[in-house]
Image (cartoon, rainbow, N blue to C red; front, top):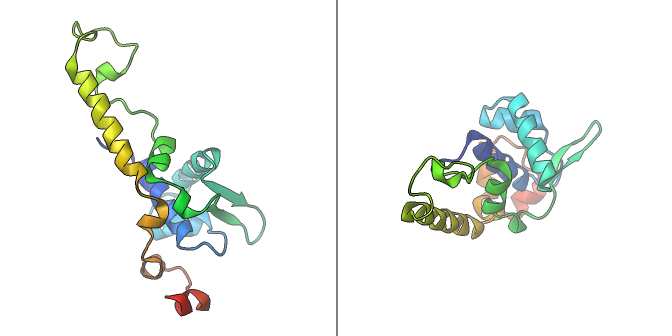
Length: 153
């Protein structure tokens, strides 16, 4: 299984917001921190807004913030929102009928089972779990560290 770049960026953007919960994060800052295209990140932000994972704050001091607590957003939820397809093989596509084994193939069932197990593991971890080292991540992402965060570290 290989996840798309969109999913990778979506998880990273949510982690950025998770370690910067006190104020909106600017898309330009997130893009610069991960050396990704701002235009591409804006497209990903739309996906995350549509999935109710982030919210946008308009205005001069606006940006994006998590729409709910980081410990309630599972990695599986992000992957489901960001991935367009989970076709592990051509026979996953119900419209394809070119394989003579389609109705009695054990491979298709095995792949479904593997995908379910994969998603089950991703559902066991939250964005907060991935962002546990909040202070270290803020430093690596070059996010200004407020005094309150330093005092609590």
